[in-house]
Image (tube, rainbow, N blue to C red; front, side):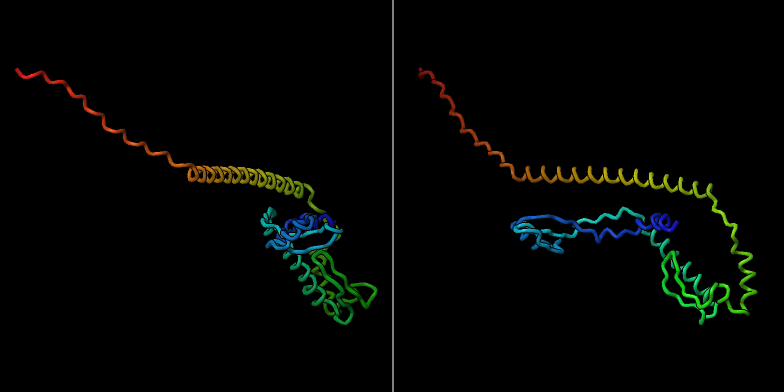
Length: 214
């Protein structure tokens, strides 16, 4: 259950800005990569062979980070509520000690054999009443509701992927048109100007022979 819960939201807060690109290059290309602004790390593999780690020039976040962030923070809040609303309020602080806490687990050392024995005597009545109303052993997950939510989530993810594909296609088409326009502009600027036509010389007027005077 723990692995299922973690895997359901863990990928949503993946920080792709920390991802890198690893290349295996020779001497000449390694010198060029080291001088680049994306260079991060260099390891020698063999003679004239190097492992070059580069930062990615373009980082594309494809996960709903805000959803994973909310789930993570809400899990922290629940664990803090458990500690301060139960252990700190109902238990004798001299009979327990917190060892470790995570978003889905809590490790505590007890001075008694049972957790119930750590509860303060004056707080046991209140604890029993609260436990009788809110904490029962007959809890059953609503499988039908969970399945419906899973189907809706799958539908939303499919819709998101379709929109993402349409957006990528439009972006690619826009980039292609821009590149084509740049090429046409450069070609037009580099083309030689047409030669101006030289004006034709004026035609000589034909002299008409005049008849001799009488």
